[in-house]
Amino acid sequence: MIHIVDYGLGNIGAFLTLYKRQDIPAVAVSSAEELAKADHILLPGVGSFDHAMRLLNASGMRETLDHLVKDRKVPVLGICVGMQIIGDSSDEGQDAGLGWIPGRIRDLGGRGPAHRGLPLPHMGWNDVTPTRPLPLLSGVADPRYYFLHSFYFDNSDPADSAATAHYGDDFTCIVNRGNVWGVQFHPEKSHSFGVALLKNFAEL
Image (tube, rainbow, N blue to C red; front, top):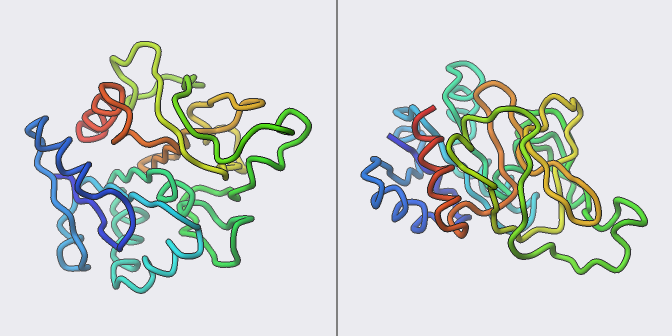
C-alpha cells in the first residue's frame, strides 16, 4: 500500500489516480495514526522550502515519518519540494530540513556562467541520465521527465546522486541513499515515464 503524505502540499489527487489506473493500492494520509501503517511513502510538495517544512512539522506526522524512514527503513519517495525537504537546509529559507540525505538546496541560477541568461524556473521536459543502475527507472528507455523548479539538491556525498539532468550544466535530479529516494521532476506530469517510475517505486 502506497501512503501519500497529505500535509497540505502537492497534487495528491493525481498520484491517487495514477496508482488506481495501475491497480496499485494507494491512500492519502493526514494523521500519524494512518501513516504508521505505511510500507511505502510518497512525500509530494510544491512551493517554498520553509512553507513545506512548517506545514509538515505542524501536521503531527513528522515524528512518525522520521521513525518509519530512519528506524524501520520504509521506502520513501520525495517529489519536487518533497525531494528538497529531505535535505538539510535551503538557500530559499531558514528552516532545517528532514536531513535524511545530507545536502543543501541551492539556487539553480547561481551555479555560474553556464546559467546566465537561462530563464527560471527551469520548466519543461528534460532528459534524465542515471549515474548508476536504478530500480526506479527499471524498464524505462531514454527517460524524460517534466521539470518545474528554480532550486536543486546539492548533495554532500556524490554517491547520493543517482541521476542528473542538464540545464546550463548537469545537476542532480534524483537522489538516493538506502530506502530514501527523491526526484526533482514531476512524475505525475510525465506521462508513461512517470507511470513507470511510480510503479517501480511501489515494487521496491
